[in-house]
Length: 307
Image (cartoon, rainbow, N blue to C red):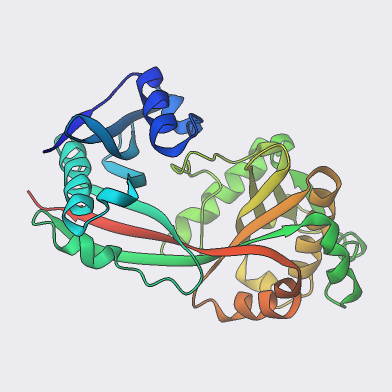
């Protein structure tokens, strides 16, 4: 007989994780009680743990982020998977104010994505959007391969009078300028605000995020926002350049300048490329594909709860 239980205690979650997965390390966001309300569901068959699902809701918001869904291989039937999925969504839906969910998951290369169809089978769920990106990881020592190409000109921006300011040292008037600009382009599909709080549990690393400033001004030309995955790995979460700067070599110079800084401190670098972004896909194919250590597809499924 299958039954489900919502668990709250960190020690109990650690124990369940260790029993099912062989590891008791929890994502940082599950420990941030003041910031997030966690939703953790244990699945049992005949009183033996066979499944685990967890996600978070940032307090004061209406979105549930599902980050992990696991059913033991021997019990991994369609009905068991959808039962666990239905339970975790129903639990999140019962929390006051929550009206939608984002399911974040990864696909290995060439794996078919059956999750949208799976969610569509839940009566109170409506899939409203699906986004995917290619996640790549390289060894920073291999950045030497890219240095032989003409695009690798990290000092060009300084030759042209541009400045790079660390986000931790970014003055308030520059942040205000970025904030004012973002209000006018919120509908820009490739715009991501550096002020937004990433709910994935990996916040921005203010000491490894950078703003490019136009010559002789305190006006931003773009930014690269990074987050530390571990003491050895940094990931570039968002790279945004103002439209007028994209047609110049400054964008390449800014990117390679930051690559050199990252290579001094980290053993690995990872980043995402939105599937369908032809320009970035071409850059990856020409410069990063030969040195890619590993890759997978990162997906985000947006689901509306029907009341």
